[in-house]
Length: 283
Image 1 (cartoon, helix red, strand yellow):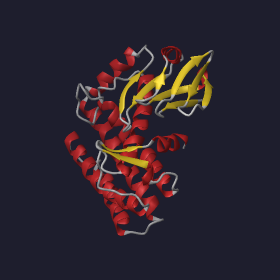
Image 2 (cartoon, one colour):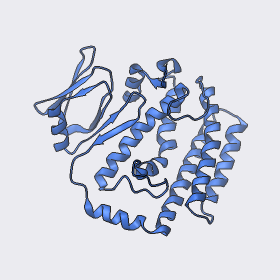
Image 3 (cartoon, one colour):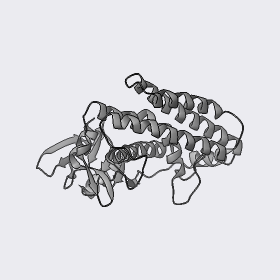
């Protein structure tokens, strides 16, 4: 089972028989049986044939489309959303106490994952900013269970994130990369561009899992509800950012699988190069 990534400029994919055939810009050809594909990620300068799209959807495979900065622009999923699951979701999220319980668990797990990652690296790099931040985050994780509403939880989450990324930035610099503080879009440096790129894959996986469960992405319980924003996607991503994306990115830096000169500075901020995208996906 595998995920097919069409990210290189000029790459093309088509259906031939029962297989997906991928041709790279340099002429390299590879293929995979359709029944082995669990997901497809398509970049802005790649092409996927209509026949391949239909075959993948019939197989129950979701397709995600991302831009050069790693932003998920949209997703194409098989039809057949579970109405019963959506009704159950709406009932649960209409219960303020239930939403508060879910939000507490999520924020606590997020902060715990953050101090767990910093604690791991504090054994490799002895520094007060790491040990002190771990101690502060442990206290904040306990404070989550205290009284207060959703706004208080968002405040705790935001304060913890600020402390965490200050320590995270220290690690990034120790590993030879630049860090100008956490910036989303545009990315102010290569490390932030790499984070944004990794979050795009995490978002894709969360969206696919939600589609499979029949959940409505617009109805979240922590982030503000916005008709133009899929709140539940970003709620569920929070739990996995440190454990998956941030841990993975630090590993790439630590092992020098990727270096900062493999990312590109543009007028629209930093972005990941074709070669770096290939290395990222291969890992």
